[in-house]
Image 1 (cartoon, one colour):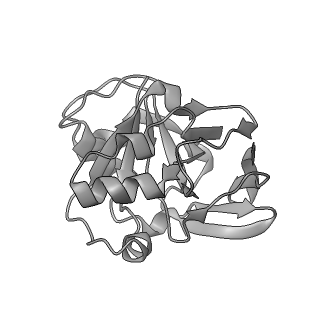
Image 2 (tube, helix red, strand yellow):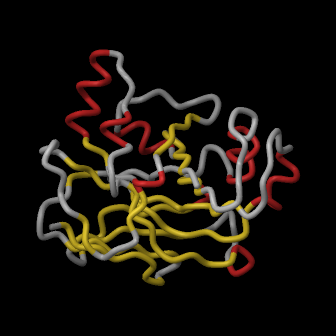
Length: 201
């Protein structure tokens, strides 16, 4: 199983990060050791600026490569919620030096993962999702605001990387990313239904 993360897929998030809007999907990968399904997340000792990024997650149900966009909907059957934790201070240093970002994005437990919903139960172009920290709304997004749709993302990524059953695609984060601290309680929602909970320790 691999984790494929799409960057800058919401225009307002790209703006808040002072990044240009992409003309094609941008993706990077996390190892399977990044997945966290427990309720506790331990703040890593190598960063002082850990940011949350809430994202809708596609679960691949069929292997494929060079998938045409019109058939991409056949390759995932569930949608869930995840967090792409980012060591923002380390990422900034990597950016300045023109280095890869893996140690800022791909560290152990950097991809908490919540529950999944069968996609038939959702209106794919109008999925509301939200992250609350200590019961306060921090990020609110909707799939209608994606720059690149689920199908476009699957088709594009599959040109470069073969998708396998069980792979996860984190589809991008909306605006409102920010820091978390030890003691914070994070809860993620899809269409007002709680899908993910964790405590930062």
